[in-house]
Image (cartoon, rainbow, N blue to C red; front, top):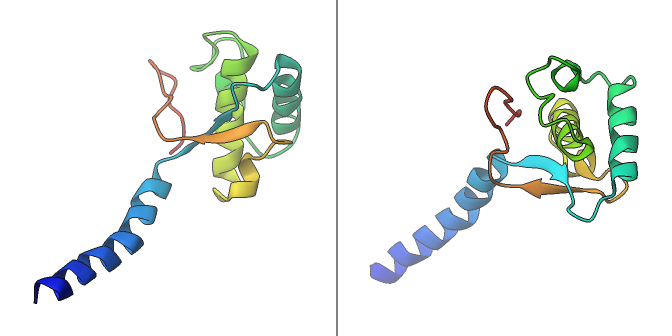
Length: 112
């Protein structure tokens, strides 16, 4: 009976763990992405991709810190979530990656 129980838990783990871990992930820039690449991502995302970039505009909840990397982080994640949370929506010419820790800070809340 114990081997059947172990098999059951292994099968349950194989199904449940990917579901749980894939639920809370954020699309963020790779550490190696340059400011030029990230600015191109922002321009693409905020230039007509049905993504609300208001939070990274002056006075917005995610404007500070005012860096290209921080603004790209918000925009890339917003794009990923608004485009169905599919893996290809976080590629950005190989400058995007997945983060599993919530990057939200202060009043800047990232989509989950």
